[in-house]
Image (tube, rainbow, N blue to C red):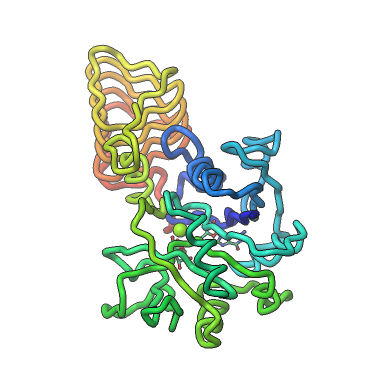
Length: 335
Ligand code: GDD
Ligand code: MG
């Protein structure tokens, strides 16, 4: 089976890190988020990935010039303008000549979900499309998917405003679709799968869903991006990994606790880094303290500075000596 991965969004919630690169290129476990996504697909019989790109496609093409990613061949499809999720699925499917059932994945969702089981369920039940579901504590940030108890989807409510939810099972952002789904998607305008296509298919009783209890995270916000990285260190997601890249240089007089430290990162004497992500080439000068924060590529944190509580320092940014940053995005963004 082939998989279309949606990677064309603007990544606004992760700005400024995504000002000029797609979020799926930001690193989770010291490699692009996208590789974390594709790795699970490769374990479940997906033979080719079609990358549905819009914003900054060159970031992907430059990263994977051989058209291989995490062990799978990839095809690039670039939308002329943003087509929204369903429009993007249709455009990618038509451009790549998809003519049998296919998988769709949100490119910021890292999961160990059993895709083979989802495909088997979809086929057995004869659905036109099947959505993978995951339980969550905060359904209002996602698409809520009530079912009738036999797997048939009875409604689809994207990011509801009110406090009452029929279920805590949400759209995990993984779908199996028959090609006939594409006929329901208009050609001439952006179309959302969440607010237009799935609600309509639910009404027509053609949509099914299967819950999964496996590891799942949408790494598209600062909190969840950080968590996606730290989960690899604390064993939340499979085997614990060592977060310090073997080409990073950490002074023996610095302390690094539960943090993802990228290639070429330099951490000087007396610095303390805890529960944080330092991307490739970042530099931390003497006695600086970084906690619960994200530092972009080649950013410099000056001597004795403090970077705390979900602060984001953009790529290449320089934080002067003795600066204190608490819950700030540097530079500040409109979002
Ligand atoms: N090609 C293309 N074109 N891709 C797009 C476009 C577009 O116009 N718009 C968004 N995407 C991509 C994003 O890059 C991302 O990988 C994926 O589609 C989903 O978009 P998000 O912006 O991350 O959506 P969300 O997190 O708010 O909500 C979605 O995901 C949740 C699960 O993580 C929805 O599908 C929810 O229903 C779902 O619960
Ligand atoms: Mg998302």
